[in-house]
Length: 601
Ligand SMILES: C[S@@+](CC[C@H](N)C(=O)[O-])C[C@H]1O[C@@H](n2cnc3c(N)ncnc32)[C@H](O)[C@@H]1O
Image (tube, rainbow, N blue to C red; front, side, top):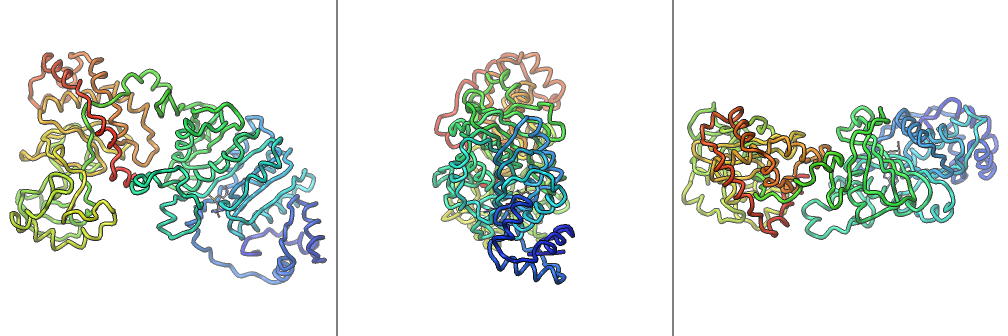
């Protein structure tokens, strides 16, 4: 039956029917504490009276409110049990357990079952219904297991962001602590889109500057904030910390260890299937570490369902943060600065209007847009464009889609379109509201029909390109279509070349085993956008080229690129390598993480 909006078992109903004959608050709470360890089970007399009333009547089913802003994904009992079983193998014996956002209480039930020495448990939860559900479940547990030792248990209905962990920290300095749980799965930007106030007051806790806030670097997971609250309060206590969280949160914690230097070590992550456990399409794992240790900046990666087999080690190798320390330690000499600046493709945020297809593939200037509207425009500004999903094959010289490239550099005046290209102007201007309604602030006060990610480099005839979103590090070689360079959208990265032979050499180096293994050692494939400009700029093409004999280059050419019918010779290879000695200027490197890249991440 439902009590205080939660399901309670027949055993709990019977328990209350037998024991709530007297309704004195102090006595009832005393009885419950003796029976199941929970302190102050009821906050006030009214709650007892209400329960007595409810137990005599059948309850209607109450519909669930939308809990998106609370990142509410309750841990299935088998997963909280699996977590505790794993912790048992580490011979941990907690005296104090803290579950910072305990929900319906499955972690609390699991620790009760797995760790008999616990003296005190703190569970904090914002949702009163879950507070009741946790209390009733614990009561049910001790009705069934009346012989078990009962720790003192506090289930506190409070907002975690107002909760003072310092008090617990001070009171239990000498005790062995276990902080365990599964904090909310929601980001601050999602919360702001929901106009939610379920945020910490200090939302810029990573001290990002104003620019980062605009570009999206200020976006963070609430779980990360809560994990850092725990580390700030308990990293110097003896004990352990175990949270189910997104892999990106774990990665950030390990990344920030270089500067934060929390006293944690034995950092581990145990990947689990978030789709199966929570019906969430994200990469997630159990984050574990030992508290009060010499600080570590390395995390061992395992599979939660097969936890003895070490998969990788991620973390810091000197001043570099990498995904696979073992292979990186053999390849780190190739981590440098790419002599060619990687560029991101065109961003227009107007796909309905700017993503075009040719009608019936005819070789005339008739197009259809994403709104299924057909129109004819001049050819001048129309270019083939590739999206991430098009970058699968080696050599590409055509496309499914087309776009209108309205500028040759960012901020360029677009008045010429009206005078020189009347049909193009008429089409674009008839859709002006789509351009004006673009949300991103980068378009504010810019010329009509402005786009981003455009410059001299966009019009280079030959390109080597890669998608930022795929789990593959294979590069494609783009050739011009009808003498016009092929464009890429902003999910892709490329280097542009005037000479085909230089594009070919670069393509061969990038697809060489050394580069592929190097990239696989530094890329975190569980990120939303695993391949970024920052990553690509780390490829030291010259150092890798120096490891490749010309015979290797010509073999690759003969087996994969022969159709290009160009002349490849050792002298040309040597000259190409000489050209790689020019490093990009330092200010270009500073600008690698562009506004639009971060907006997409
Ligand atoms: C991902 S669920 C996990 C619940 C529980 N830890 C478990 O493992 O099943 C996150 C929980 O955090 C709670 N929560 C969200 N925001 C909170 C806040 N500001 N303070 C306390 N609890 C909060 C939600 O109501 C939800 O029960």
